[in-house]
Amino acid sequence: MRRHATLVMSLLTYSLYGCVMVVPDDDDRILVIGTRPQRAYRNAATMEHAAAGRDAWHPRIVQIHDYWMSIRPGPDLLPGRAHIKPHEIAPLLPSLWMLDVQRDPFRLRFRLVGTRVVQAVGTDSTGKWMDERWPTAGPRYFERYAEVVKTGRPSWRRGPPDFHSDPRFTEVESILLPLATDGITVDILLALSVFYRNDGREF
Image (cartoon, rainbow, N blue to C red; front, side):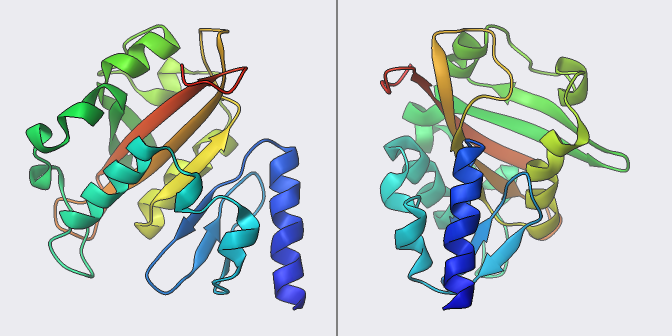
């Protein structure tokens, strides 16, 4: 009961910061990632109280997550870039982006950026390092990405954009999906973003 109450309070805290990220896995574990230290909970009921389970995800995010699950080469292995067939997810391509992972030091480079993302942020960052694209971003901004690389677990988020060029959208929903050439060591992050206007409509 105390652990359940702690989760609810944590989610309220994250909501006040405009950042709630909840990721389920096969054993009903929920990983909450935000501006405070990560904690995991195994109570399946917490998904309902989080109000951020798959039922709350945008359909395109559900589709890319399902596709990612379907191409995993084994139950304990991550898919790699070679497992992705663009023609199988053609309607999702404009909303997708990929990051190459450099581990030492930890850096991320845009491998590709979909046209819808380019339109929303106002520039094509393909080939650029993320820390060069947004030099004012502090270490905390990269914690979410580093956590996915470290754990090999997807991460979902919906909240105010960290950086953007178009004032017409005020909220972003995204998912980060780990890819690994060897099935274990994450070397690419596959992401999909959905942008929302201040009236809640999709951008």
